[in-house]
Every structure is written in C-alpha cells, then in structure tokens.
Length: 137
Image (cartoon, rainbow, N blue to C red):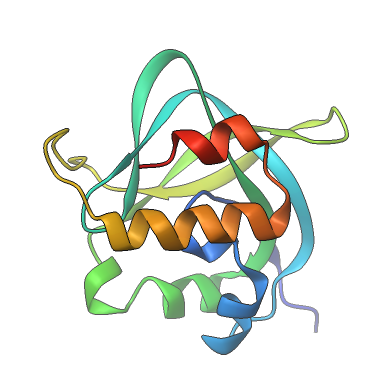
C-alpha cells in the first residue's frame, strides 16, 4: 500500500534536502516556491509573520504524515504547528501546502546570527533569489 504524501512548504533549514535525508526522511517532488503576505523572522529558529506584500521563499516537498511527525517531534521544534498556505511554485502553479510555523513568532529584537548564516547558505545552495538571500539576517 502506498503511503499518502503531503505537500509541505519549508522556509528554514529544512529547505536542504541533505539535512532532511540525514534526519531519516525521504523528500520527494521538491520544488522551489514562495508564499505571499509573509515575512521571515529569525529567533532561535525561523518563523513566519504576516506582512502585507511580503514574500518568503523556500521549497515545497512531499512527505508522509510519519515523516512530518518525526521531524517535528524533536524538542526544539515541538512548538511549531501546521498551517495551510498557498505556495507559488516556480513553474507558475499555485498549490495548497502545509507550513509549520510558531503560534507566537519570535520578537523582532531576537537575533540568531549563526542560524541566519546557515539559512543564507541553504538558500544559496538551492538557488533562491539573491535579493531574498541578502535580506536574511
């Protein structure tokens, strides 16, 4: 029996396919994507905040329920909750996807320069727009 897979928008370090594989999941159907009306905010980890005319870039991948449970059972990720978003895929398609986000985003005063540096590298690796990469701090 085939396991059902869900489309998930990742905007943090989980954009890196090798990291996902190292964590024991097998991402499929990987596509560059963005989500409108949000901005990236980095505290201890990445989160999204509503921002009119904002855009956050990342990837949409297909994962099973089991794989998502495994990823988000790690203690530092347990606070993240799934939300529905519309993801603009790089081929022009718009799809519904899950997006894990914090119910309470980090404050704008929080900064994690180490995480931001790793996120910029991951974004470069997958080919996100240069101006977006430059905005990650």
